[in-house]
Length: 325
Figure 1 (tube, rainbow, N blue to C red):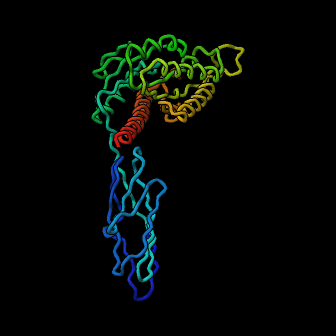
Figure 2 (figure 1 turned 120 degrees about the vertical axis):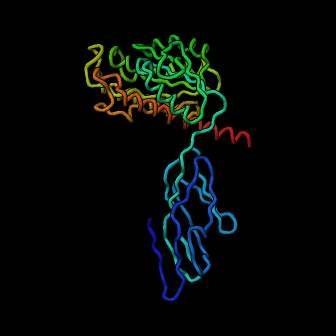
Figure 3 (figure 1 turned 180 degrees about the horizontal axis):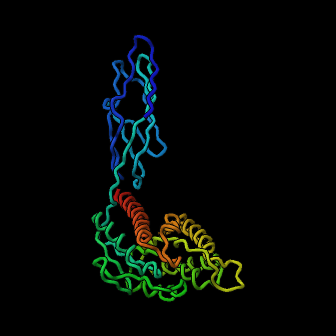
């Protein structure tokens, strides 16, 4: 906390008496100047500023703080005050936004769609437990079933499957299950085991699949699009390919995916990046085969999906409020 007060002998200084304002995610907060600053001489000038917050004066020395619906954590508010005796105080307030789960209406229908990384139930269990703890109702959907870890066994994670193979059945999957949210992670098998195209070509296949999913889905369907996890360095695929180190091809593929996702997002499409690769370390989270994840890796994968889906739910909530008003 930074406090600097300029004093003149015999005059009244401004005193800060409190430092912390508590808020709640997606809600504005009103606070009163007198609860945080005291001066025997009337305060004549007040300026609050913050890069992440909007702070506007109301009546009777009150102020309202508002912020983007999705942010939480601690933020600093710079404060500058002067009183009638020309005393000045430069200080800071700490604004702590408590995280809260986004509201949702009805059941969240989610399709986990991918290969063996999705087939492994641990990431799905992590996501399920986090969403249930937030009070959501869930329904996982897909043609596959795996009982045991959570009450809902359904999913669409198939070991060994490639982007092309999912493309062949995507329209049927969407028509049959009508998911609202699709957790999409594909490309590992195209690179780690069956590499016969460049990273750019594989990423284009992935983007074509995304388009097919949108074309085959109900209006409003949202894709939570994941980068694939890092893999160990090893030559893979056709010898005539210049790109054969699967670790490097994975990095290039994920870079292309981020660009495709960003472009689609900028065009107003219902897609969001779940950057799994960014959160995983090869030495800490990838198993002995150099491709599949260990326990902590799958937990991180589920948590990244959770954070991305929360952002989507907050976004949809904000849109619904605007439409209501």
